[in-house]
Image (tube, rainbow, N blue to C red; front, top):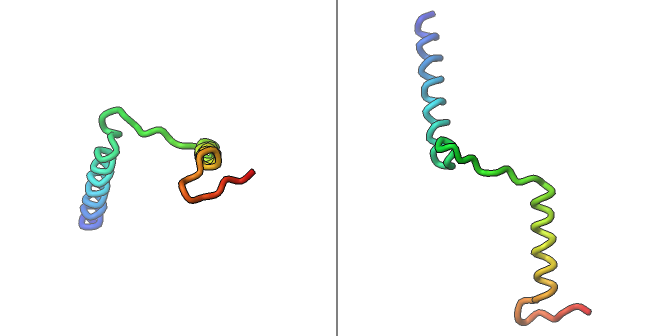
Length: 65
């Protein structure tokens, strides 16, 4: 029984350390949490990009009128 408890405790410690490393990589441990991007914000960004491409097509592409 003690062996199972020790293994569970070890697993929790390892998981906590992995979480800390991931948090440090994204800056969450410094109080800076990356903002979550909503589906609406992603869609708006995609549409803005499409409008920009239509206004200023890359060289070699015909403009649609």
